[in-house]
Length: 307
Ligand SMILES: *Cc1c(COP(=O)(O)O)cnc(C)c1O
Image (cartoon, rainbow, N blue to C red; front, top):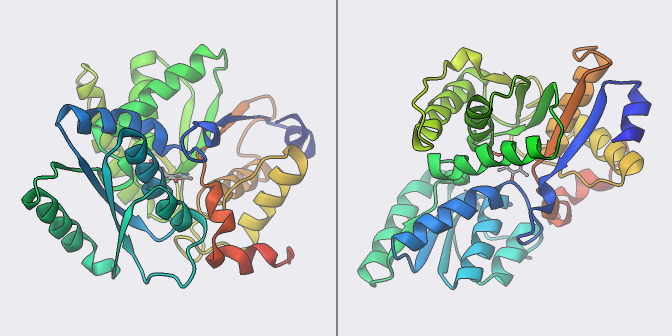
């Protein structure tokens, strides 16, 4: 990102475009679903079920993957059915998913009920884990790191949005397998650092074991920065707005208000504080999320000028 690099006067900023992973407007869940859907197929699934927030990118990409493979898709979304389907919800519908709206606290129960209903109907249900973050899903990000290194860049830092932890766990597992010595820094979008670190260490351990190398990871060794959570999940404010405007106006890159906007805002703050050395290579891993830009719930935020 040469213009963004020049704007800050270093470090050397790069971007990995997982907003271009190719399935239904892209995003990081595609890399996880590549392996999760293979697992579903191996188990003879005919229905896939998963759950997420209203504007879940994971649910949208799961719905699209299911459509590609000819499976039914049931999405348990936490919240009230909006008057108009916009953003990811609109896409969920277009991809033919059946949406069940429930209160957040009812989510797991509703998922179990939908699972047993599908089972009773002989539809061979397959539960796609929350955020696609199981060892099978996270394995997609171990391979993603291989892909990055094969592209010839060995960044000193990889910075990205971290939430259910599968992306970070996969990168950490891949980093160990491939002898990558750079830093893998997740910017938490919603979780306190110790919680997320423990989850990532556990999942990275399971993932690397799945890939044939038993290694235990320590939670404290997982790099998570939770300083940019602000008012919580999906509540975007001035830092996200500035990140969207800088990436947009200097690089023609679209970020989203929930994940990449927050991670980029964190990275920008760290750049300003001199956290990175000027000559270091810092790679921003773009994890997708663009459809949320067109969701009703973020229009007020997006229309507001920068304060
Ligand atoms: C799900 C998601 C993330 C977080 O990835 P995890 O593997 O759940 O930590 C980041 N960015 C976007 C756009 C996402 O949809």
